[in-house]
Image 1 (tube, rainbow, N blue to C red):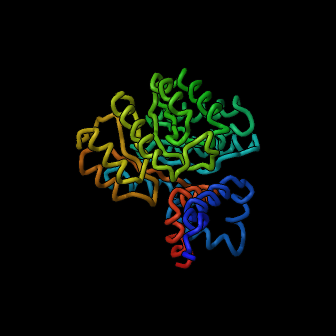
Image 2 (cartoon, one colour; image 1 turned 90 degrees about the vertical axis):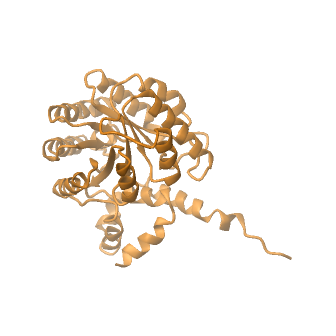
Image 3 (cartoon, rainbow, N blue to C red; image 1 turned 180 degrees about the horizontal axis):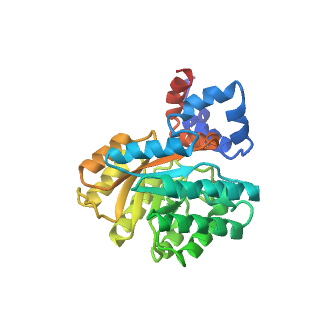
Length: 318
């Protein structure tokens, strides 16, 4: 009898990604792994490829290097799913300091659940409004990051409320989510940059396309073309060369300093993409993260491309 590869074997990369996304939902691990005397140092060696460091000072230094390299920067203090009101207020202060200390050309990004959304939407709005006022005062863009689909309604509601007072607050949308087709028209009517990502969270199929579904590339490019044609401020956040090249061709193969769009990659991923797009005149941005709660973030980065697990093994041993 001829042996055939089993479904379990052929789907191994997808299964590995699903496990990593599951780990990224375990909020207890974000404390336990970094503090574990055995796992912590090993995991930290993996994290340093994706994370600027644990302090705002580390992020400021990295942002300066990004800007010196000809790109814009966006800095986020990691810490989603904060469930303590006093801690959310203290974490908000770090974002206020970031608005004051980051170099020119650097925006401030945040998860709304870091500043209260996991507790109460009004608390999140109050703390986010403080950050919006601080970033407006220092002439910086403020960007709201994507979270799991169970929080999307609340995220968009807070963003909409902020847009009633501010015109510099952007929001992230996920191409994977089926609901994005209905969300995008309303967002195009609001000020602030729209950041398009594929989406990294563990989601059921009735909510989102699987990351490995070939249809996701077509969906992403359709949204990217719509954003590009709209003239709205937007960011194409992807490391996928095929998507980048497609968008570049749609934009005419050339950009300019005042273009409403930009190409964005994450720290540790895709600097060659940024350099290539910058050489063609497109505005470019690198997304820099810092903080002590890096474990869940790293799990999501590895889940986006299971081949990164191999690099993580090398990093862990170095």
